[in-house]
Image 1 (cartoon, rainbow, N blue to C red):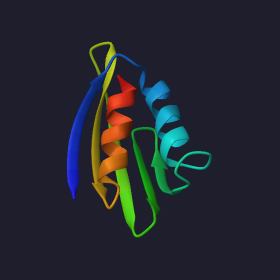
Image 2: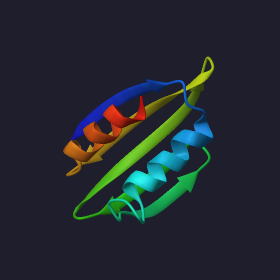
Image 3: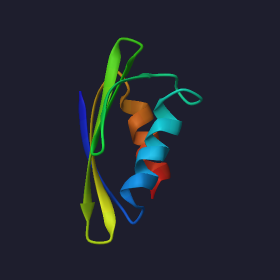
Image 4: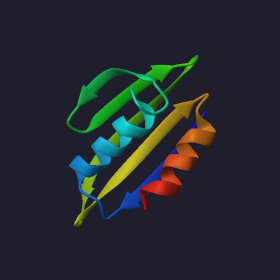
Length: 81
């Protein structure tokens, strides 16, 4: 299991779209099992990715928890910037 915190200047809406594009259909193909305005849960391939978002002083803080998708979460984090 991996837990990460990322801070970005991107808006919450931009981060949600990036998460869906990267982990969801058209990306890694994980299924969205739960979605609220501030939390997305992706499942597939025997693991999961949970992203919790919070607006943070003109940007967004993203807390990521994953099982079996560590490498991909690190890759997403490096691309989010």
